[in-house]
Amino acid sequence: MSAGVTIELGRRYKFAASHRLHSEKLSSEENSRVYGKCNNPHGHGHNYVLEISVSGTVDPATGMIVNLADLDQFVEKEVIEAFDHRSLNEEVPAFRDLVPTTENVCIEIYQRLQRFSKAKLERVRVEETGNNAFEYSGERDENGNVD
Picture 1: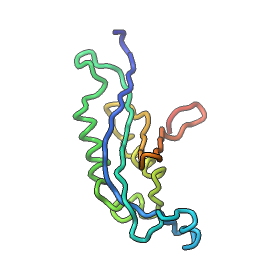
Picture 2 (picture 1 turned 30 degrees about the vertical axis):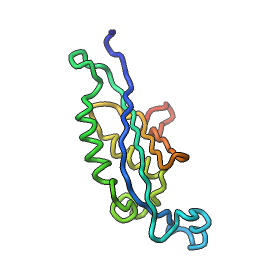
Picture 3 (picture 1 turned 90 degrees about the vertical axis):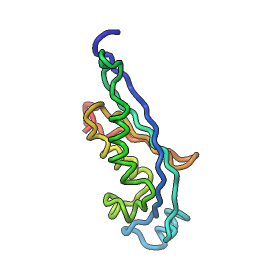
Picture 4 (picture 1 turned 60 degrees about the vertical axis):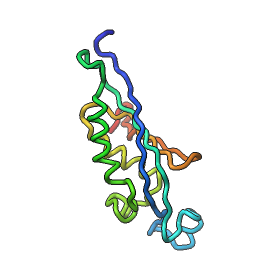
């Protein structure tokens, strides 16, 4: 194998969380119209599937781009412990003033996982239901580099 070969690794995790889609910037009627049943004052829950992709070069000594135990420990600490069996609106500070749509959940998870130093985070995909999944790969500058 030639030196500097970059490989991408995909890893899947699961967590359950509840949320209420409600914006303080909208009236009660607008919230009801925009978010429908997801605006239920008591919230509702999902069994989310989180898929992450990281990349790196293959370490010639281990044959891996990253130790899965290190990656799993980081995701557990940064995402699973923070989100699993939580009310996103009430228990995750990032969503106190931000509507916890799955789009915003996806971005928040990306920002948390971007701090992983042992491989490059390529993208985050969050599946909310069998019909809805969202993917985020960071903001890009004019040269296509992730900010």
